[in-house]
Length: 111
Image (cartoon, rainbow, N blue to C red; front, side, top):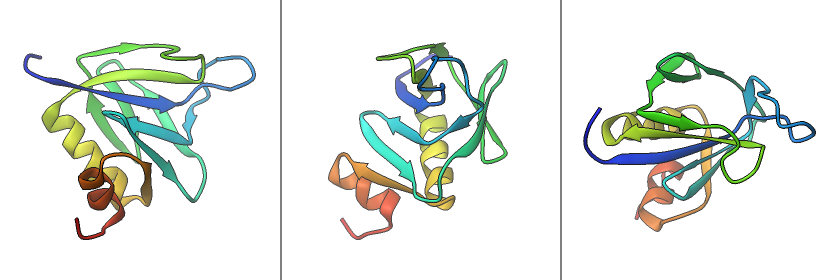
């Protein structure tokens, strides 16, 4: 994969021991924080990247324990990051902190 990559972080590790938990409760796309009000969501790391809400996303690279042991980071091509943002929006995720344009898109508000 070539071109610009977008950092995407998921809080997918157990906060007590740092081990992969198989679920996610927070995310961050290019510095924009997201939460799903309805609680945790199943999350799987795959050979190509990860799967969330029954959709798989291809990552150019990944790093465990990014920032602290609760978070894993994936670098997605712009097209995949946009597809992920649209899918998270459709599944009830909300932007709790971030750029106005991104928050307005995710939260379904006029910018």
